[in-house]
Image (cartoon, rainbow, N blue to C red; front, side, top):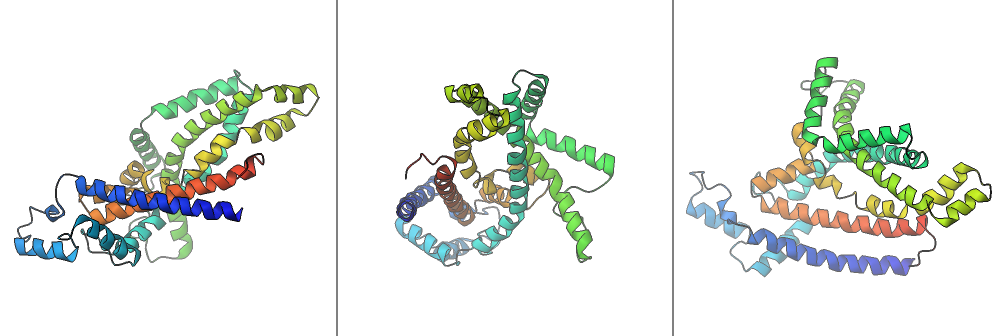
Length: 319
């Protein structure tokens, strides 16, 4: 086990190194130059451009820019070109804002998708299966931004409560219980919206995988031996159907960054996805590169978690 963890850590560190190089080169191959961050500003004089280039080592060769950037990033010295805030501090603040959306949306998706998909597979072709299938395809077909506006209009006109932002304007500085309940209320709608599409898609995968496993010979043998149907479905079939979802579960970590750009923009939620989108529009290269680096770390961490969970789901898998 320890040798597997050490070998995996070395492999993922090497992979992360090459990903950082590729990300750095792609950003610098994009059209435009860093000195064109705000070309319409009359105060952006040639002298200021030259000072800007020296301050951020843009007058150095590309390989030295790479070394300087990741050295300053890991020591916390790199700052945003847009507002001169430390990049790691800026990303950490947005990360804490996105984390509740991610946790609640993920819990809703995974706790509801499996019961829906498993029951649909068990009662294939019945009224329950057809109903779940209809609503699943309906949610998949409806654009997220359209569904978001429909929910906002319904909640605001029906309950007359604010839903935009992380908290109600003017409520800051009040007592803790009302502030906590207000934050939960603002969190509820975007979390449910983010989970609807995931529930629709994941429940279809669960149903398909369960149907494939239910058709195997050993499942028919278990039924023929007189085992209780719940034991056959949930002990024998479900465990063997879990492996594809172990991979999917490990790869949900990058959703902390790019999985909720539309939702965060519609609900004015200051999260990671919205920050990355604004950084791209503003050509804020330090933030863009750092977000790419954090995304790569999350992907590699997710694959490592998947590798470990494989052993839990199926003991036959050898390291």
